Length: 95
Image (cartoon, rainbow, N blue to C red; front, side, top):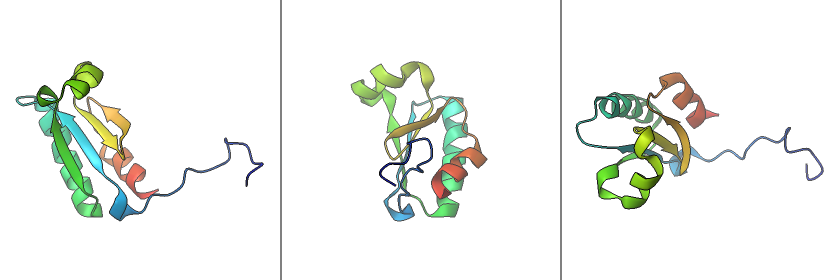
């Protein structure tokens, strides 16, 4: 496997109990409310923990994601922004 091209390597699977979904949102944002409904549903069904972070309370998140909210991070990496696709999030968390 060491000599195999990175194109053919799969990323190492992270056990579900160690996964974390983070929703970066702001108060009063209807897209954020929609995104939270999808995150709650998928994470609830799969038993994956999730958290919400308020972009107005974290300067680093504000500077990085302000124009993209809501933003969904999976294990600290950006998964999507603006609209959350339920099937895509589910695949990310189960593959």
